[in-house]
Image (cartoon, rainbow, N blue to C red; front, side, top):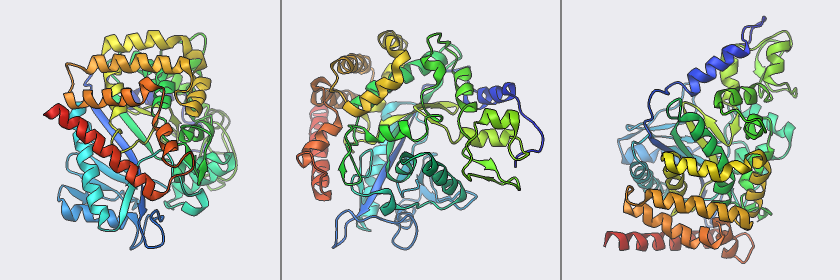
Amino acid sequence: MPSTHRQVTCGQLRNQILKSFFHDMNEDRRVVGLELEIMPFRATNERENSLIPLHGENGVVNAVHQLPLSDPKWSFAPLADGTPRFAHVDGAQITFEPGAQIEYSSAPHPDLIGVITTMNDFICQLNQVLAESNIWLFHGGLNPWYNIEDVGLQMRKERYQNMNNFFAARGPFGQKMMRLSTSLQVNLDVGTAEVAPRRWLAANLMAPIMTAAFANSPFVEGKVAGAKSFRSIIWQNLDPTRTGFQRGLEAADYRPCPVEQYLDFAVDAYCMFLPDESGNMVFDGHFRTFRHWMECGFRGYYPTMDDWMMHLSTLFPEVRPRGFYEIRYLDALCASYWMIPGIVLTHILYDETAREQVIEWLSPYRTTLTGMLREAATRGLDDDELAGLTKRVFELALTTASGREDERLVRILDQFMREFTLQQRCPADELLEINDGKVFTARQYRDFEAKKADLVTAALAQVQG
């Protein structure tokens, strides 16, 4: 509940960011977490890609309820407000997005092979459970067949309704993000006080090349989108005050302090929720930055620290600090290749020599990151300069991984590079070829996924043999 008098200052907000987002900087544990969003569809007699509601007897949540019945390590553990959630004994969880997307969030793992193995086992397990309800999973950055009206707002709790109204007032992109998009997120340690600013800088500098290399959303609402990663285009445009890069990161007089950068970014972002006449937090058509609300008040109310924390939860930059670094610029990928970005990012950002080499290569582009990201999302690796940078970074990641990583992961990265990166291709190029540049059918996509899985299985068999 907001206050009738001013309570917080920028200094207090800064301390809260430091406490909440950069709180454990005495050691660099180098654990890895992954979050994967997947779009479910049901095969029916009428069509193979029927939409599924989130709730109800035939809904997604009800289908996932079969998981705890087959595996006692899973349990239904809804949040206090009734939002559905499933929890695993190892700390992983399953949640749901406003378009009925399924999101799996792994527990932090001490090594990359551990988290990849765990997530792969989960995907296989989920496929088996959902198949009993004729549900199959689409692995791509955007729902390619349906529009926002078709999908609707499946999460009806107040937070999502206000978010939906806010984005609708800002333009067409926010609702597409909520209802149609799916992504892959890699979570890495902040590191020590000395490491954190360098890892932050490198993670942000890599956004354009990673977006281009893994672009996987060339279709939207039943048509060609005109961009290799239209999911990224959506995120860049839904509200520039809360997405993209911090201004300080691209400033000519760059100061390597992620806390200060994030503070400036956060206080100058529009509030998604503001007090109504009774002090209830809603969106009713007014746009105010948090800084303006904090300094001038709104309807006689001022923000509290709880309001600040709520505001921070509505910010979606390319890299977001939350006690660890959420790397958010990746499309969800083909089920056979979703592990590749984690291999690249882990071996660049967790190796000091590799990280500093990448910073040296990419720092000349720092002041133009926003434009570079847009170009990457639009063209993928069609640009020779961006493709050249991507090849250098990926080759460095492969070299760093070799000899210290599980040989299966090294082999998969090498195969991906040969098929895509070294050929200046991204996964979107492959999707565009499935149906000669037109939106593929559900059957064409499922046959494509099965073929890719067979190729990866064969590659791993060579290693194990």
